[in-house]
Length: 329
Image (cartoon, rainbow, N blue to C red; front, top):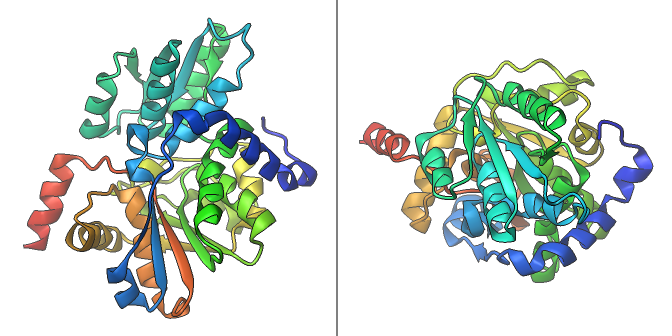
């Protein structure tokens, strides 16, 4: 998993195509919604890819389903294991429960109440371990090895990357020309998959990676040429917070294909969440708001361009929402 060559990076689009054929019966083809309000703000033709309307509430189902469906039939009676701040766990739980397999989820102490409650509804065993996603992922990996389970990693796996990349197939089926796609970055699974496919079939499309200032490990890692130690502070974009696993294949793909990075303050993320509520009557979580905030921050560059913002999830806790609305008064 930790080794990837330039040749395999350049062939990842084939894995994305195979993934789409595999998972299409199990996922929603999510809407691509034009945003008049963002066009007014930016002068661009802006479309929102609404993965917040995906089954389980985020894009994470795509990768988890692809990984599980790719498992050899002789192995599927084992327990599948996942570690996540919430959305990967929900996608994993949805996939495992629908396929009738055994599963177990490990969560960091930072998981939000909204995501925890959503997970409990699936009836899959949950265990809290560690105060950072990297710690939780390492523990889940160790648990899987010691107990002969199958690990479903949130990002550091070609099957996960390929599953998330199927979003790009749907984009190109609906749009003839895409000048830029804004994608959140945490561990890098979704932007690795989308960029791998788009750079093959729409090479002029700019891939813009979006991270919070309070959790910018991938941005700093690319700048340093190596994966840096996590140094996250609390952020509204909890789904992208935490460090990156050493040797992550997403790091190599991002270095190859992502054209630009934009980092956002907490105020900018908050403003984008409220923008979505006011102008689209749509609840989005902090990670989703990164793409809207990044477009608004760089809007002078995109006038008269065709732009996509990937809206990755919807799980914003009631307490956070109440605080955001109160602060706005």
